[in-house]
Amino acid sequence: MNSFGTVLFFTYLYFLLHDRFGFTDQSNLVVAALLGLCYAVASWQAGRLAQRWGYFTALKVGFCVMIAGLLAGSQLASAAGQITAAAVVTLGMCFTWPVLEALISEGETPDRVPHAIGIYNITWAATNAGALFIGGTLIMKLGYQSLFYLPAALFALEMALAFWLEKLPKPAVDEPSLTVASHAGGPAPRLAKSFQRMAWLANPFAYIAINTLLAVLPGIAAKFHLSPMSAGFICSLWGFMRFLSFIVLWRWTGWHYRFRWLATAFGLLVISFAAILIAPSLVVVLMAQLLFGAAVGLIYYSSLFYAMDASDTKSEHGGIHEAAIGVGNSVGPAVGAAALWLAPQNASMGAWAVSGLLAAGLGGLLWLRKKT
Image (cartoon, rainbow, N blue to C red; front, side):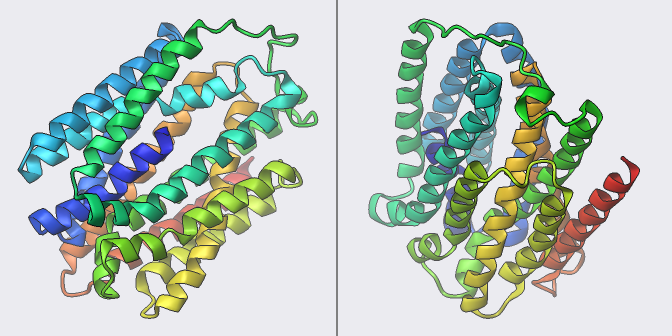
């Protein structure tokens, strides 16, 4: 529910800004950069606060803030008001994802932590793809107000579930120390930390690509003369591919602590991102989405797995994981917006600039591997 509600709102917010207020790709990229910066700073702090307050208290705070932001946004008629409301929703969301990531492995025996992370990833990826797919249809059938009321209803239901789950008896844990060796077949602590750092480098770059792509979806739709409904159907393919990749990565563990898989995924990320944004053919866009979904799937899965595999302060490390996502969410759109501002005559300049940034990230990954 958290995945469906947040993805529905934040993806199709850019269509609302485009259709109601005439926002261009550059304007939407600036909004995406601002919201990403907000998420990066707040997620890191929210993960630490959740460790002190308790997981369910943090969840309830997050749901309350998100509901308040959505209800306020439903009544605001200006672009500035919508962006402010979205920032409030972003702040509330920061208290949910780090905690949910911590809860999946809290109380699990060491040998079941990878299994729990797999179920978590598959669940949110399925509803994420569903929200991308159906969001445009909801807009056309129910209007833009559905972007506010439907997620708010889901978050209210989540809050009720949080109160209920909080009262359930906590399971006994035979081995409360979730150590690196017990999780992943006993890699050396230095090796585990090395992969954690590399995954934390790669994941922000995956979200540089993802958040840039989401911000310019209205522009892609306009280029191919697609309605929001058609854009949702066509441009959600990568989300379903990421979902399928999570299933494979959950059942097959051969990628654990294997650098070539992470490096290959990063290389595919660079190529497929550029193809989606620059290709003049819709067929190429669809084919590139298959590679894009597989690449971001492995990069995200690696980041979360290695973060949880090598730590005991779950929500704090979940906060770092989400803060890294926020950095990517901010930097990618900021670079794209700056490139379009510097070269407004070239509509593809933003895509090329972000693609260059992704290539630099791949170089950084290779350098970090060599160093460690």
